[in-house]
Length: 351
Image (cartoon, rainbow, N blue to C red):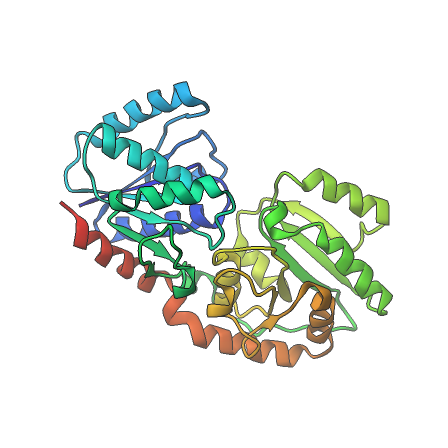
């Protein structure tokens, strides 16, 4: 069989990273895998190229180019046999549905990658195309919605071997700053401007020996930079931009923070799990299905800095929780398990 992943682009989000991991495992398993980017976004294209994963760009940017993109997709798929389309997020699904209606009735597997579908019209698109999809995937049973087919629960996954800590993580408060890592897009969903509130709260409570490293980029970067400068927080918040070696970032940090407003199942939390990196996060999306107060620090935004303070002052307890998180979820989040669940679903519907 041939698995064709269709996504809006090859940016740095969680959807793109799970596509990359699934494609890598597919190639290793001898399953032909193709990745199709609807747009020309290619931020992490080099990672696909390094793994010899076949990628195509449809270069869609308007309705007119959508038609041309659909024709290009047909030129890619037409010579292939036993194809399964794995469409990611609503844009990927729209492209897959249009292809199925216009050219060839191929089986469609759909992953929403989120709990929240904010726009009502998108919910109706999902509802009225149910019959055109063979299966819907999401991260937890709580993600079942009226506009989705009964979901197949498959979590996101990462290569645990890649992130495994070789040496025990230490924090020496007398010799080093405590490094918090914010890993994700600098956009509304991830709540990056809230970091300014966090710094103010920590400083007001007498904690000054820390820094927040921001690994990512996005539409709110300039606004965040302005607030950092306006408040004189340059020593406390460092925007590092998009990073290629996330495993190294994890090894060199003491704690991951994710004050998201809404989520699906963030890959950054799974990477932190594999790294045994303590976590402070909000309880949104599918996060509470896997993360809880026994294996990380779940917090309301109003109490977020208090959880961060607790980790700084009692780091040994934080490491105990991180070890428990690793043990709790390795069998769920490891990419080998995640890939096999996807493969089983593909095989069920391949023509």
